[in-house]
Image 1 (cartoon, protein in one colour):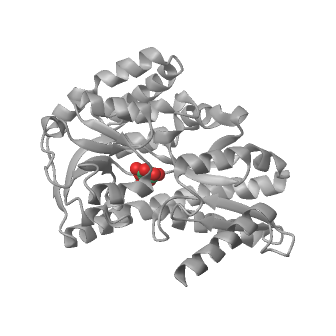
Image 2 (cartoon, rainbow, N blue to C red):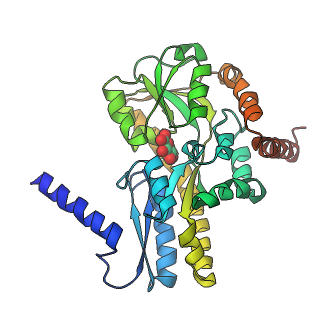
Image 3 (spheres, rainbow, N blue to C red):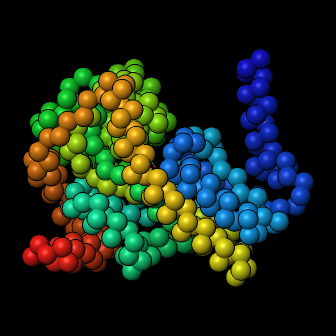
Length: 339
Ligand code: GCU
């Protein structure tokens, strides 16, 4: 019976997706995919986008959000967005480097000093715009960013206190060559896979650990298996909302304006909910028996810092952006009276 219902659900989904049925009103269905649960700040941000659009131009647009990898893992949905099979998807910037290598910049470990630096860069259009539009010719561009916190290691057995503890461990990373290289510098064995595969991989000892923000521990239940979470803080990699260019270009000026405002609102709502969600996730994780530890981050940083030079030398697009990020760091330091 369950299987029967599942088959029907899939058939209905395919019908809705590719023929537009299920909506006899003639409205344009706008499909947005993401990999998180319905309580995740990204889903809340997208609900705000849906509400904003539908309250204004809902007579013509029906925004539909597909959470939980329902339409596929991130790399797949970026491809769907590229071809126009769906209109928008949320992706971690980590996987975007295989679509345009300008995105490698955000995979550099210890790129930002702290949240303030990270947010200031993401809010500076002169830095982000050339990156967001780099994929225009491939059929899509980024229209908003979402906070995905700080990535840290978490493991099933061995607690990560120093970089040496990572030696020989199999650690899941996102599908990104830069992340694989980072793990090589940590002397660990990088195991790239999509987000949805991580829980089972942890459970079946295919991997010894993974790296992510605190929400993965609770929302994706990784903390049921991996109980040792160590704040080594190696990356702050944002998520982005990307949109199909043909769809965006098909909008008249008024509709485009509504969508643009909705993108900003989704970003704002997501980030307002982020801080709260991380606090709650930590409390929840502790109840699950997850132990948080706070190692000295400096030895971790030292070990992977050569990656900056290595990547910058190979990819000449990055120097300008890297310098702008450095400049932002200096500006913040002097405005905070630190220099
Ligand atoms: C975070 C991020 C996701 C990403 C995931 C991952 O949850 O927000 O966009 O898919 O990490 O590690 O795959």
